[in-house]
Image (cartoon, rainbow, N blue to C red):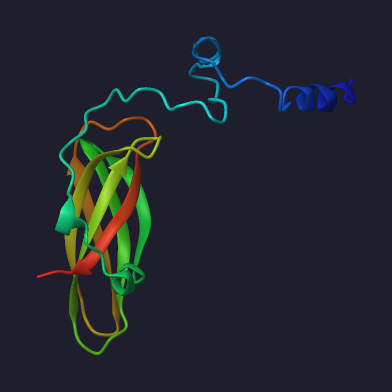
Length: 149
């Protein structure tokens, strides 16, 4: 019995298999099943909020490397990202951190921006949160870091 399973698995992965069809995706997709590789994501059904664009997404690569995302969790009415910002320099800095909140398919649905003052040679914790209707699989992504005011 065990010898048959690998043969069936290999047979199902033939290069001659046609591309996934819409009928096949509808018949096999369900809450308990994962989509097949190459299948398009399901249509977005949540609410997309206005997202930052242009200069609001400018990021300083050196500063970006000093920021870490350490947590991403639901709140009572939205979502929260938590992280740390490190300042190895000899002068205090205020960093501005832009976080995108995405659905399970990496589609941005909302954002939050926060500033964190970081004394010279120190590390500080930051929090960015937003009230919005979340979708299953919401994730947090640090999108930009720059000097704040």
